[in-house]
Image 1 (cartoon, rainbow, N blue to C red):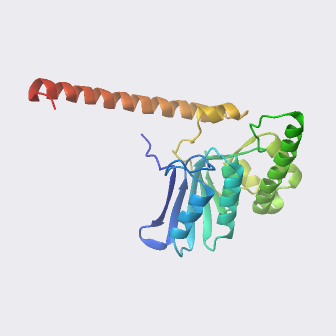
Image 2: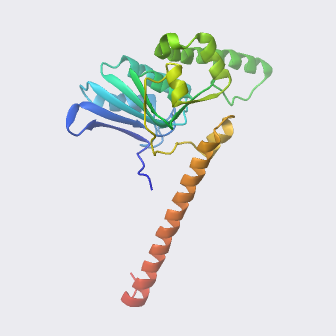
Image 3: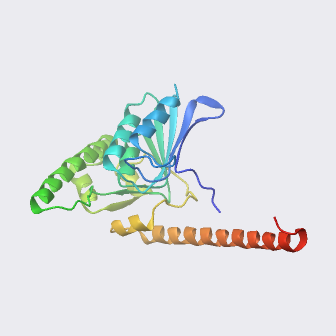
Length: 246
């Protein structure tokens, strides 16, 4: 099975204290329920603890999450004194693509993707509240537009990025490179995309290959758990029959 990174990790490179590796391998949330969650405050805390680093390798494999938390993280990256290289290890979807756009350099693998769309809300209310929410969502979207355009430069127009967002666009590495949202492409990576069935249902145009990778990954996990259970059962029988139990 492919080795799995922790959802959230930030550490200095062992042989180079001026360089750090940062991993965002899960959803961006507004409240940190456990150590694996990524919030703006937890990101800032861990970033400060890294100390005086000159290079940050930011590895992202995330389905996105809370817009404001993601924008805050993106701004932290953009204003940090260190040179930040963002690696899209498999998927940078939704607000995690905005985080990536805040880096000085973006590297994607041939088989990695970015997904860009407009922010949405599950708000419940009356017509007046929905109209206000629509205005708020438009304003929130503008902050993402600015980040994408700052990264892309002349390769991307405001009209085009808004079209990309309207259509919930899943960009391949080559497409992201053409739009200026990626600076370099590496050979294919073996890391599977980190996206849940619940989020698959929310997104409208999820590529079939990502769905298949998720199914294969889940099948592999189930098979491994089954094997572990069978070994445990066999060990229990051994102890019971030959050693007298535990």
